[in-house]
Image (cartoon, rainbow, N blue to C red; front, side, top):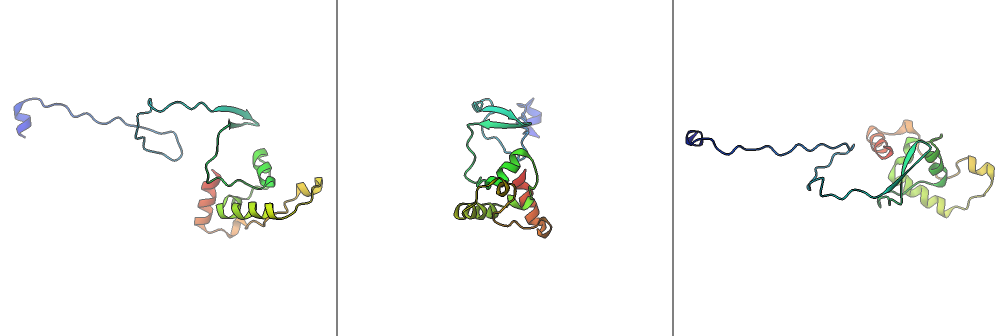
Length: 134
């Protein structure tokens, strides 16, 4: 009240509104113009954009070659349950330890660790697997 009587006080400015275009928003702690622009080369292949030379995080276990090829080509089967991180670790371990027969017919059929049915997932399992998929 006293400040209003003394005259115009310095106007209080609002902080700038920062918006993100990411699916998982992150509060920026530095100014966007300070962050160096990415110099990662991108390449378009089969309608997908790939970051050439980019390194994935240490959480990305990967898939067995059968599912890796299906995901890259976007062809079936790609069950949602294969995006479970524990299953991926067990599937890679099983793929490494088991000896596979190399033949054209064997490559068409999946002979690795059995994956759970999508219909037996709980709601939380489905949510986690779907988030890992996207």
